Image 1 (cartoon, rainbow, N blue to C red):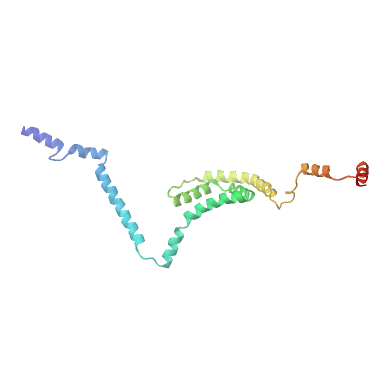
Image 2 (cartoon, one colour; image 1 turned 90 degrees about the vertical axis):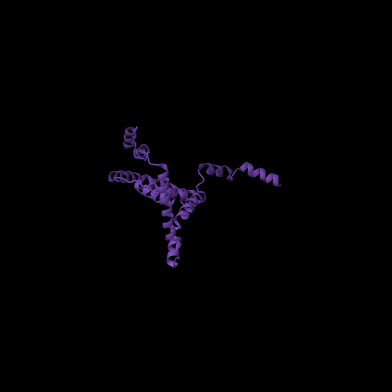
Length: 193
């Protein structure tokens, strides 16, 4: 029996759980992983507490206030866009036509900045060829955008001809205009007498 204990002790270790240790090579120990995650989180919280725990001077408070502005400004800016679209749709449409000329990589950069301020930290990278294709697309689209802006400006209340009522109103004015009619003039004279 002693030889069996010696062989099994060599294979499975003397008092150790060799099977559990071997399994941890392929799958981490959940309890140890949780301990490491809790330790990392506690260290991050201690670091953050040390950054914000001290007394700030006027400059530090000013910069801290500036750092808090982008999120509310972007949120209220979007609400302001909706309000301006309702208040002056033509003005808003002109601005949106101008946005059609913004290149796609710049939209991606703006999206990354907005995503950064609203929680995500990811940015897509563009290659030089895609930037050149985008620039060519925008240059080709510029005349159409300029034409759309000219059409929109023609709709403004202060544009020449904007208040033109069209042919229907001219016909109505012609139909109601008094003309010289001898029979009606004679009837008006006899009716007045």
